[in-house]
Length: 160
Image (cartoon, rainbow, N blue to C red; front, side, top):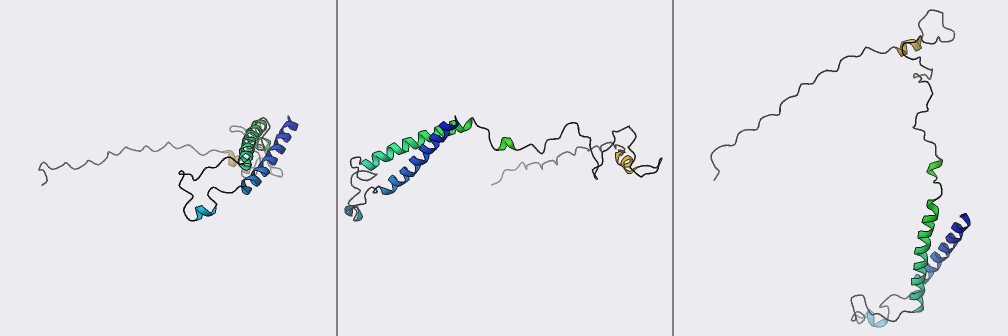
């Protein structure tokens, strides 16, 4: 599959370079001396139409090759892994990791005794225990709905 991809890629690049060269070599429509003085646009809206030259036929063939190789490369590349798939999701929480306080120390679950800090005296409250105490929940204040102001009544007399 990889060999096919690179073969199509090389063919695509060759077609791109030849297509650029052939388009730049072509003479534009109406670039002769008569069109410089307004005599070239008498045939049709798009200028005079001559027979298809070798360069125009080569341009058509190279454009077809370019389109086919573009679609083939898109189909072949679709089956490969994206660069974004290799990036780990940093925002997703890691399961099984204990929550930490602001200083990065593990917090004790609610209702269990807090772990003693190293070097703290036995029986003294630890800062981790103070951090785990949740404040008392206060009830949410009720918001009374205020009625919309009434619109003034329209006068009964018609305007002239």
